[in-house]
Image 1 (cartoon, rainbow, N blue to C red):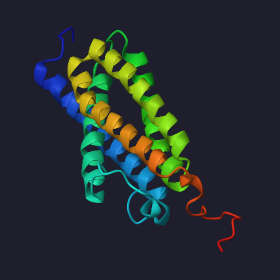
Image 2 (cartoon, rainbow, N blue to C red; image 1 turned 135 degrees about the vertical axis):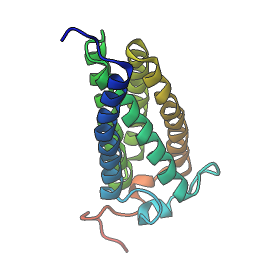
Image 3 (cartoon, rainbow, N blue to C red; image 1 turned 120 degrees about the vertical axis):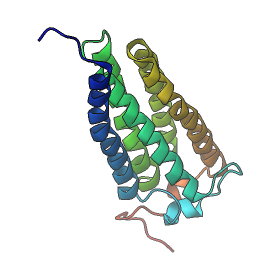
Length: 184
């Protein structure tokens, strides 16, 4: 068989990838957030002074669901681009930023390391820009799907910075679970 795949075959191949990548990216992101007690309802987070620009809690769930779906679709596009030059580097950058993304919630919400979390966000942003540039060289559509994520990372960085500014002692606000600190 020497024929090149038809458009419908390529589309089906992409859909098969997306049926794996979208749920995987979404599930792992959800597990990271849930395991670290992210968001409202976390006693430490609830005790923080929030910036005026802080959206309501439900908005974070909606935003991250959409963003993880877009990331999963972008990943599927790159995985489907077998033989494309630069694909391996694009995938390596994507997975590096995604692992850092999944580490942010435990660092911020479980460990209460708000300053470290800001540096992690900066690293995620830098890797995501590099990923987007590499994605553009492989599949332009995949790079476009990264743009809402980059925008949200900027907003998340702003919120993280403002929380540090408004809560200079945020790390010590509420003892960590399992901490030897004694509450008086």
